Length: 282
Ligand SMILES: C[S@@+](CC[C@H](N)C(=O)[O-])C[C@H]1O[C@@H](n2cnc3c(N)ncnc32)[C@H](O)[C@@H]1O
Image (cartoon, rainbow, N blue to C red; front, side, top):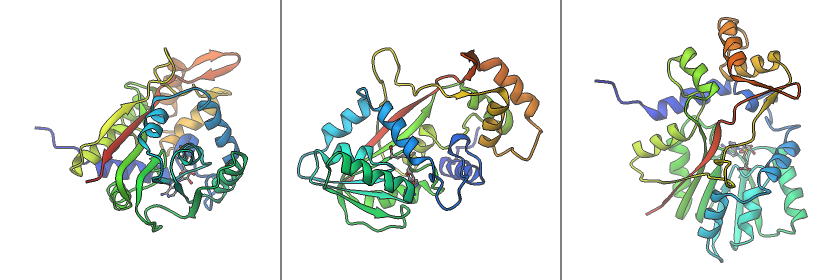
């Protein structure tokens, strides 16, 4: 009989792998603030992605009742805080990155939003009063202890917790590489691992898979690499193998098979969507 997977341990292992300076696009090239020099670009990317409707935003926004309070953990450049501040009485935005916070304040001012309070710091180290709702969108991938992260979130929530995870499609490029390098297909902290952590904590969360506009399947835009060298570096960094050439030949073969050439660029497959997980705190 197979042994039961310890999902919290797998989450921790993948977070720690990323924290060693790995993590592909999330790579920590500035130890003090990993988002320094990248916050404005991130904000523009979110604005582009949010230019059309999506089911998660629609769902969370319709769930939040007027006159209530919302806690936005890892608020980044403030997209969710701004959206929910239009419905709630007050929003508390928590973030550890001064660069992201600075762009968030610009965005709040540009939108004329005055009911968002900002708390600088790392969740779950910061302490906040309980709020009616709490949300954490793609801001838990650097936290090794997901159960502690979620327990603190629940202590700060009176009604409903919302968590947005990235959910890779089955058989994506990074999954194939993870299977080869690590013997299992999970290449980074994601929905499948996070959801199983929540189940192992005894929670019974609901899931809404992002569907996106008609025909898109809710998949995020394709990433591109300028050349094969850049694609190889991205892959090696993702697996923490910048100092090793052990898998270079395998990675080059994989990338050669699976990346497409378009307009002089190497185009990655669209292999990621968001999954919204939510549950009532009782
Ligand atoms: C990928 S961005 C997501 C931002 C925003 N939630 C969104 O969906 O647009 C991740 C943000 O979470 C913040 N973050 C990551 N881990 C955090 C933690 N443990 N406590 C506070 N902020 C955190 C980062 O500084 C960054 O601003």
